[in-house]
Length: 438
Image (tube, helix red, strand yellow):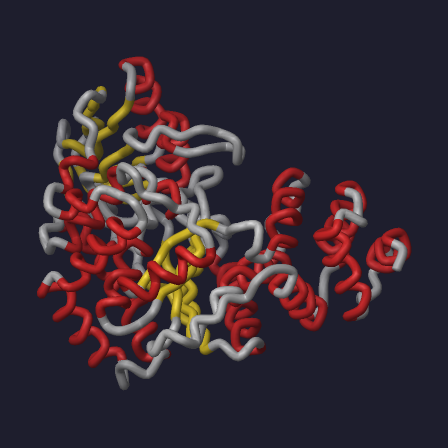
């Protein structure tokens, strides 16, 4: 089929046939479609929309453009979790070992940070030696050995998505729900899952700030998962302030190890609470628990006994990292940094923390990337000392910046002041879980 005919049809607002979509995806993979033709069709999709069938067919064709993993030889339910991304969102590092300690195999294909949000792969690479570029064979071996593995998207996993997403990012066509669904689900379905939990963020620090849009995305993701035979549930969670205690790659790993060691600060508790909730839903979907209450009891036991920590230790060793960070998490924090305390200029209650601004500050320090080719500094970061609803006096510490230079510290302080609001009346801390779709 000629690319021009397919582009013309969608340009004119008509639905594409299954065969036309298959021809498009095949052309992406073989090079028969030029980049300008791919972007022309994607822009037509973005402007004129896709039907539910078109969305599902694009997902299916992108899924089968590469390998679909087969873990049938592993005698355990296969499940994973995916987050749409946020600031301080590090729950994968807790969920994977927790779920594995309960008998779930977790083959997790993760991503890197882009823009103001962090990426699981970048966090893991702050552990010395940790390898996130696993071959399919090594990926399978690690899952079979310790119950979970974390790797990036390879050339063999949904390669059509990798090419199309890069072009969408360059042409401002990322924020369209059917294409987001196809991108996420083509990679997750390639993991050969029985169950999938989706954490759809909403609020200031989310890609979709409007609650209504987050609900629509959650519903579309769940519908697609079920369409492909995977038990799927989505949870819509708040991203109006950074999640937990730290933002920044090595700092977030530090927070997770401290949580797994049961040595967390009170500020980090919401990271554990959300991780527990998402993992509990995973246990129910896979049939390892009858209900959420039973699942939470199981998870508390695995957490408190240290079994989840030991799974993480085993995974780090298997993926080439330094497992001693599980015994001494302070090794993750570089000491040769400029540390600046952000102090309250007046007393009252913290009424708002703009998560987007906090994320942007960490990126400006080198802790994130604005384009995929950017290098990152894993050691810089920000500690959220006071959270929404906390009482503060003038001079109290709101947060703590770790960066490389005094100039960076001064610029970060000025930007972070704009992220905080202090009021005379107490504000309620935003509910962590806003809704669920299943």
